[in-house]
Length: 351
Ligand code: GDP
Image (tube, rainbow, N blue to C red; front, top):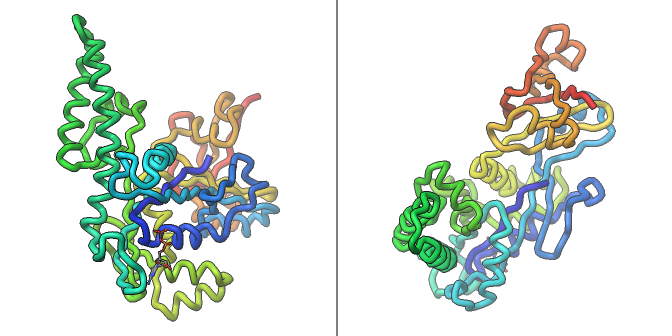
């Protein structure tokens, strides 16, 4: 499964422009049977030069990228948590995604009205975050009521813990803090996981900037120019590269976004490669070998024996598997091996 990113932000900040640009080149759905393509959902391939190089090295018939899903979630306005605008329906959409990408307007253009009359990234962020916080507070208050009524006359350690935790979170939310910014312990995160709070999801900020600020590096997010992204999406690869050069642009918005999402979601990529296909797989940091194998097929996980692993660059430097084996660079790893970003692997398993 690919992971999904929900795009939110005030009206007229450039969400749809960015969504259309990012999802212009959608993946071929036949290679990804799990994809359900809806109008506000776009599934795109994660560009990965390692995969392309391995595919070339092994002359693979097919090259299959890992994917990322973008969901355009319009309708989040001031008062959404109270049903304003498209209200709760859209908050429900946010519940489904793995991370939230908040587009914040920084571009100045007198022809594009700002819903609050003035370009002010800080206050725009606060408006959106406050709606998400209010929605979480509603869920949290109901949960607290439930816990309180269950506790009547009972001394239950689990309920006690829940109550203390919910009250701690409540006071933080009321102070305007997102749950993703709170310092929560692993056990606390586990307790609240089932509540599916919105502000617990990683929040990425994409500042939609003017053309001349496209190489900015904001401390708390990324700079993107939706206008340029939509122009780039219309061009073929070569022309896009040329255009980026004339703009002095270091990286595409899509690349920046993907890097930032992988970081926020704690994801890495491992690769498989042979004459039939080269393929990239996304896993969480810290995943052990059998579970990584299970990404490919449940049988691989159940019957896992070992993984043969080499770093992608080492494999490339050797010019192929045979020479890498001769040089002793292919390691045999057991079930406790933790996969690393850029590992190329073959799994051995028993049926
Ligand atoms: P949404 O309501 O957030 O989805 O915003 P849209 O994507 O529909 O954009 C609103 C208006 O802003 C449109 O007229 C866009 O052409 C314009 N717009 C979007 N991104 C940029 C940008 O980076 N620079 C400028 N100047 N205009 C933009």
